[in-house]
Amino acid sequence: MITSVLVANRGEIACRVFRTCRELGIRTIAVHSDADEGALHARVADASVRLPGEAPADTYLRGDLIVKAAVAAGADAVHPGYGFLSENADFARAVQDAGLLWIGPPPEAIEAMASKTRAKQLMGIQPLTHVTEADLPVLVKAAAGGGGRGMRVVRRLADLDAELASARAEAASAFGDGEVFVEPYVENGRHVEVQILADTHGTIRPLGTRDCSLQRRHQKVVEEAPAPGLSEELQQELSTLAVRAARAVDYVGAGTVEFLVADGRAHFLEMNTRLQVEHPVTEALFGLDLVAEQIRVAEGHPLDNDPPRARGHAVEARLYAEDPSRDWTPQTGRLHRLSVPQGVRLDTGYTDGDDIGVHYDPMLAKLVAHAPTRAEAVRKLASALERAVIHGPVTNRDLLVSSLRHPEFTAARMDTGFYDRHLPELTASAADPHAPLAAALADARTGPRTGPRSRFGGWRNVPSQPQTKRYEMAGEEHEVHYRHTRTGLEADGVRVVHAEEHLVLLEVDGVQRKFEVARYGDRLHVNTTTLTALPRFPDPTAQHAPGSLLAPMPGTVVRVADGLTAGTPVKAGDPLLWLEAMKMQHKITAPVTGTLSELRAVPGQQVEPGSLLAVVTETP
Image (cartoon, helix red, strand yellow):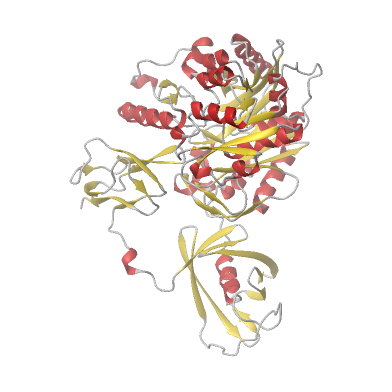
């Protein structure tokens, strides 16, 4: 029987596994990089072992160090989580060779399915070896790992070599394996998967379907179970294919078989030999704990004779520290506060006051809602996201709410091209136009006032001129005016009912509205709207020449386009260099057609947001 488990992972999934271990009375052991020394997963574990370094290649991808940590900490089992080494057969063998129990499938099954090229061959599918114009569009895909890393859609043959190189580099960084392959790209299909659970006694059980069609950068954003709108025949076909794939490799434990569904047909994608990020929707649907099942299977117990039955519908949304309106740029900084309403499940690797760094995935949390019907579950999740308190870097919260309420999604007519079609409308500013005024009034109330909660008045000196404050909101500058009077605060066009440091009540068109205000330095959060307080007089030195390319995020310059030097002619949209941040590579392109007049970026350089990378002078 397992008494102590080391989780060979970090963040949300490590915390998730620890939660089940505690419920089962199992001691928990974490590993942490130097960047994660104070991370939540390291704090909540019973013990944590340092992995020297910060980059994944030096820490969470070092199987030898993790096995050594497990032995040193007295673990008797290792759970791999997802990502990193979770689908690495050599790591699974090293764990077993050290006399530890592996909470996962046999290494041989991982080996057979971990490479997507070998998995497709096992299912009778061959990748493209020579791409022609007639094959376009195609998908470049990493043979190892998942999470959308190392994936590129190629629509022009001339772009293929560059995208292959970029995908190889990204895959090597994320998974320690740079192998990639090319396959036909099925446009506007639905991403549907089947959860399977298998024991060591020959039982393989499919646990329904999940729809994961809402994706950005080929990484899932919203998932639900069961996948809506599938015929009974197609559901049965998917389950049969999933069991066939698992049985072909003598699978044991929890795993997922993924498909693209288009025109009523199922196209096999891959088998993930691990727990998926979206496993909570299956747990909610069937009322079970998949991590507990993994542990029971690893201990040799058979699956229950009475299969669990699905109830209702479950939907999950991934909350990322990223800006969808700016090419999904990842964000960093301090997460001052994160809380969600009761009634939804929150899985996270962060808590109030934690810092979001540049080294790892930008996912902050997952919110999961379960209800008797799909419509009720979607409504419940959208409302919870809207009411959640998220103070810190920019997130995709507004996008998630808009996505869940989009008529294409509510009618279950979505596919993997959802964001390609709708991103501009979904990222249209949801900022409250009255938020700057509420912020200014709250700022005004931070000074002396009469009484503990005086509504208005009390200033000895009453200026005759309006006060002015400037804020940046949704990429635009807003200027607001208000006036102190002997009876309180006045603002043109809006009646100020109440104003204090953290709460402002305004009457707008006869309706009284409440604004909760929190300030952290020059960043303010007014309900769900984020603002930045601007100085009264802009700094004239903070200007850059036209055509300047500034780093949109902190990261590392991993590559500069071949032959690129000052004086090189470039066309608008040409890739100039690549930044790596949060395990993803981000392409920086020429903003205009002209000449590269300045190049400051060099491979290996660490840059901060706003750093000058290059300047392109536009051709007259």
